[in-house]
Amino acid sequence: MGTEVRRGPPVASGVMSPTSTARHARRPSSGGLPAPAPTSPSGWGRTAAGLTVVGLYVLASVAVWSPLLSAGIGSVIHTGGDTYLNLNLLGWVPRAIGGLHNPFFDPLLNHPGGLNLLVNTSQPLLGVLLWPVTALAGAAVSLNLAVIASMPLTAMTSYVLLRQFVGWRPAAFAGGAIVGFGPYEFQSAAHFHLQLSVTFLIPLLFVVLVWLARGQVSPGRGGVLLGALMVGQFLVSTELLATAMLVAVVAAVVTLLLVRSVRSRISDEARAATVAGGIAIVVLAWPVWFLLRGPGSIRGPVQLVAQAYRTDLLALVLPPDGLALAPRSLSRLTEGFSTLPGENVAYLGVPLVLAVLAVVVWRRSERTVVVAGIMAGLTFLLGLGGALAVTGKPGIGPGGTATGGPWLPEAVLGELPMVKNLIPSRFALYTAIFVAIVIAIGATRLRSSLRAGPLRALLPVALLVLCLAPLVPLDPVHKEFHRLSTIPTYFSSPAFRAHPAGSAMVVFPYPADPQPVAILWQAQAGYRFAMPSGHAKMPEGPDHHVAYNPQMGYATNSATGQFGAALNRGRVPVMTEANRQAILAELRDWRTVSVSASLDFIAHPKQAAAELRWLLGPPTGRVGATLYWDAPFRTR
Image (cartoon, rainbow, N blue to C red; front, side, top):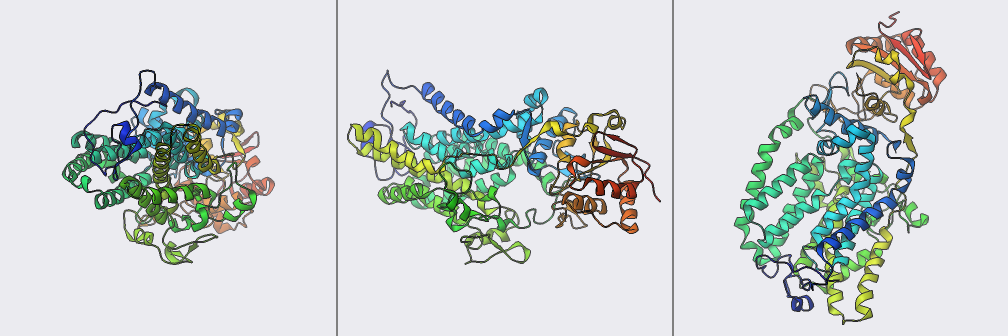
């Protein structure tokens, strides 16, 4: 394949950059990377190559998500509380901006306190970007499109990053697939964790850092680009911004120690960092204040047991569920890794691990390979958390500390106030990025070392396929789809619409673990009512610690919530007069205008209906399978 000629300032040996001649492509210097050969007039042009890469990534995503596409992106969504909350907030952000309200605060969830969206997974940037789709087709379509697009978008920007290092496009394409379709991205998307799967800005951030290290962009322009990417990433995921900054700092230190030529540009890099920091401070000053001290903010840890989600040592080579070539006998061994399937994301496979080790040893004279190899190892080490876990569920001690194995350096992060909430397993994203760099360079070097002929054409491609094959995703549908048409008809009935918009309502199933489906219904009903709710991070008590209790999960504790959580878990609570009076007092304090119980979604509908009749008296009416009680409620 031909490639374009790259023009730009001279690049010093040792920096992560290609040179500019075909001669160097065959005989690279000890520190730099080989350059692609110049493109002939009849060569494959940049536009055709780019469209082909984009098309292949999109086709791969369509194949992976064919079950969702077949079911209808406007008809179904993934089942789960995180999905319901993401959909709700994705639709709320444009609604808030359109109504000139604060897009970082939702007064309709967690009534009467409201919900700080920056503490939670609101992705306000996605809400804005998908605003036209949401307005035309609904938040469910926006959510599904964001999930489907997340993998190819990350693969594309990873391809752009890898093209900074290699001229052979198939190597860059394979590296992009490792990042964009590997277990981290696949599992995050499969669980509809938008804040984790929409990562396309992260590779672009590293692209700008590479440009600055080479001197291919001025400090001012580079700083502006970095600042813009930091702001954008903050508005998608504050956690990923924090981990990206941490990894970037570590990578910069490693590069400065190993690559002498980069040290001569340290003043330019410092100026770029100053510009980027200045932009971030100006633009994000108020959002950061709102996150840390605004209404609904939390003091202290937001993730109570972050160390429960740390990578198992064997997760690197034992495949998780959902991969095309993962034998059930092996994937069964990973049950319990990182506590939850959605956090078991570090798998690379034996061929890829061996290939990375081989390339690092073979090309140890190349500083780019050494830096990327070291960073792959360091990010994997961070993913292991504060204590080593091997073949089992990670141990957790008092206060959420990591136990059960030897102490590891990541435990230090748990003592730092700004980063103690980071979940270790999610460093797997960066491990995949640095592994992709090593593999792309290795494949390019191997191809350059071979004489022209069939072996040169086939061997590097075959080895790339061998490395990629164990990572091929198969089935992202871990649970049955939730059909949007199952919303109770009560929420479109005259009885519901008789209440003023914004009125407080209590809904059963109560919107807390393990059945927070009412969060979805609120969005489907056009955000017409406020409700006490859970399955989100909210403060509690005078010290504003994160609200959590074993019955309701992450939710503000209340007598009403405890009653609803028992029904959610298939238990009929034993009610006393004291319980009844406490619930009625809460309904009055919340200025509740209506209580509804959709019996089709409650495990023991007859018993639940009897308890609610004893609590509130005869229902005001019934719409379909939903009983509803309008205020004033019976007090005796």
